[in-house]
Image 1 (spheres, rainbow, N blue to C red):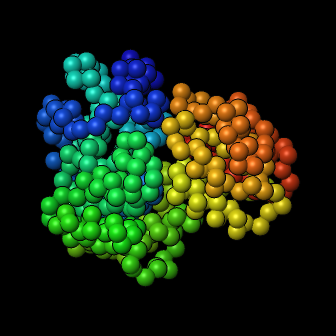
Image 2: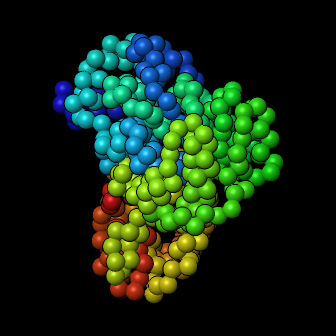
Length: 400
């Protein structure tokens, strides 16, 4: 099989959450423990940092990796979902995993895949761990896929755990209260391993403290004046989390202040991160952001409302297993909308999104593809307008 045939085999044999949604989710660690045993526990060959949270964990993971790279370490980075290509999920010092390794790993894993029937995330987690071992990384930043307690990545014992925040997302899988979701995220905390919590209300803090490991609440720190390449409002919260994590890491390994500053200012170039308040054009200003749940949309709308523009134009699409009504209720009513859908099975058809949006007095046309929607917005925009593209990772993936 070539690279594309290999990926297609994985998507068929081990359906991916990114493609089909909740039917691909396999809670529990039994499968990944069995996979780990079959591959001789590759995650034990290097140090790890474990990052969970509802929002911001991708930005935090990439920036920590950038800082560690700047400090001279060989750094693995495992994140999900990918935007354009699967290889984005597994990187070493910013370089995506080679297609040759993906093909080789899957070829050698077919018997295991056929016998254990792992999920896509389970087998790709072992692919990442195996690749990092082969590459002899010094440390790897491992982002949780979904939740924490039962996530496939939770077989690691890191030197530091990070939980960015908790808000409503995947409630059918993680629980319908913030307390239940917090318990799932807190499931990554290991005995004696320090944990940084980015944001936590007072009623949620005991959930993290009761685990018995040292806890730092980053939001209690004073704001830092260090410049950060990532510009969204949410990144000020993320920066506090990152800097609190770095302080704890500096107790375990050399990381200079210059490395911290370089990682913060060059995270995109060092790691390939995309889709975080990313500017795609000027005159009109075109912004793309992957924020897609209630908390993320609130921050995005707040930032959009502060932009000076003649007309705000929103290219919006969602997936069908999200709380679409909660998102629509937050979107600005004065904007012009271009409803669309990504080319994946989970996408909510643009026409259905348009109808739902009418209930919230959001008016616009629907378009069968993201590119057509964006082009329509560009055609109708003046140089003083702002075009926003978002609502889903998959929408952003088709324009960045």
